[in-house]
Length: 271
Length: 230
Image (cartoon, rainbow over all chains, first blue to last red; front, side, top):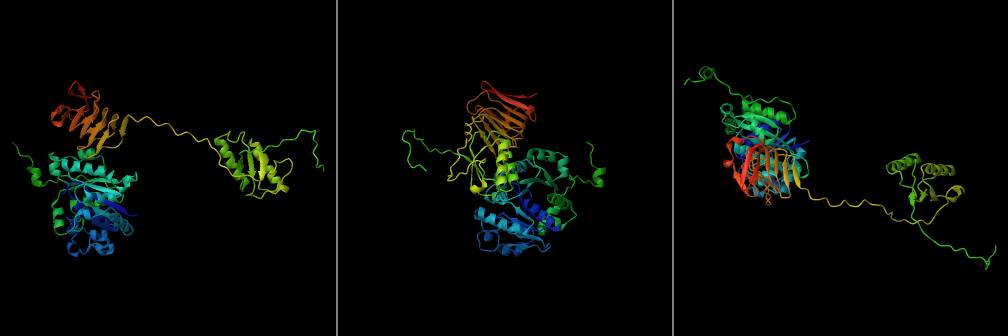
């Protein structure tokens, strides 16, 4: 059965788009038929991270308004046969999205794909609410900072009240994904701990993605991090998260600080 | 045949009167249908007592002995059959209930249970899930109990007291209708703001030593007191 997954956070810049691309590619690599949908109308990025920016002809808004058919707007990934992108419009704004239009598109995508991953824009306005509106599951991307955690809390409240599932009295299945986790700063106590975050959000953890240059490098070359450097720490963490989404039990790895030899020898400086 | 009536005799006066009867419409297999009757009787044993019952056999084709058996089966269940309809008279013997014709359909009056009286309005509100940032719970009729945390940026407004079995990170405003006896209790206090009957304290004013502990807040005159709960 097709699953609609929204990747959301409330706060901007926490890694929603990176996560959408990485999870999408990872699920597609394990044989699932996946479409990633960019809901960030007016500020689209997913096409860049997926490396498909030069192949966009029609977009989500064209389909919502009936200008183009869904099959015309879908872009197939060059690296993975069963990964598709539905880009957002850069020239319009989020008011061009309508509830019925989005509902129709999601229904149509449900018949064609195993996973429909919606990349939500930041904020709690129309774009974000419509991205989560038809979701069955949600990944709430959170950085280990108080501002991000509070925004995530707000988004969880909206997932529990503003979605179609919530209105039917059901629950959207929610997962917390902690990104940009810096083990060195965590060990110095400069970040919220994983326990603190989970205690505040009271929602199960899907994975912990370590802060890494690999993420930036991958998005600069327009490749999901899980494809660009599959053995890197963030890629492995995303792959584990994708397997958990598919229902597998994978032990949770808390990224530990890896110290070099010199650090170990000269780690502590005497006063 | 005497066409003349004897004038000396008192005339027999006939009057018409109609009664409402239950009509049973047995269907084949009769055994299964009898089980249905038994089930009804099991639910309400006195259901057919004292009520006239008519058997409508138009849906089934029964022999004389089968009809006799059916009537006795009902009698053993304390259901007395007043008459039979929908069957050829030749199938009936004199010991059976008489044949009835010309029945008209009518609506049975059932004793419907009276609608329950309007319940008194609840005086407390129980929330079983965490209250998330941005949510506002307003309940001016009485106490609010939260089985979970109240997130930073969430608020609870209650006419009575507020009980939080989790961490209070948001705002709690108790006794908003002028109830100065209302209190605020929480498992862990990290509140942004506490207010009772309009008197408030912000996070800065709350004693730092109380943080992360079970605490309660109440009003003493116009001073808000916050103390640990153990």
